[in-house]
Image 1: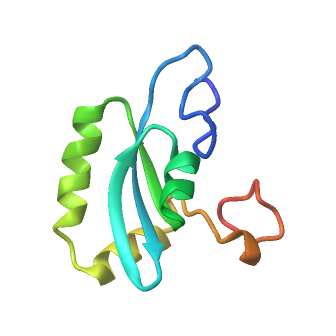
Image 2: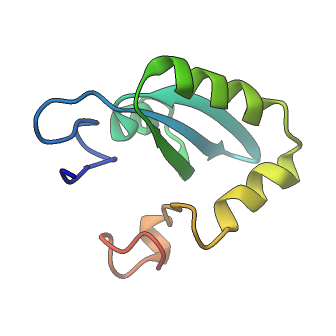
Length: 102
């Protein structure tokens, strides 16, 4: 499988388009959404990315987004704390920006 750059282009090598479901935080509020370019989306909204997951198409990403949006805040936060889930640490809290688990 080709390497994915989730915070950059949003594409696999070979131009297979990927979608991401994300949870981000701005101030004390959590936001859930979908995007193809996470870095661009976080910059647009000036938010901190807490969690993301990959989806092969917009339909499956939108279905998962709707599911997560129905959850309470504590369940959304727990999703990002699970060891098998990709969590992006705040750059201020990470000495290695390439290590998503800190």
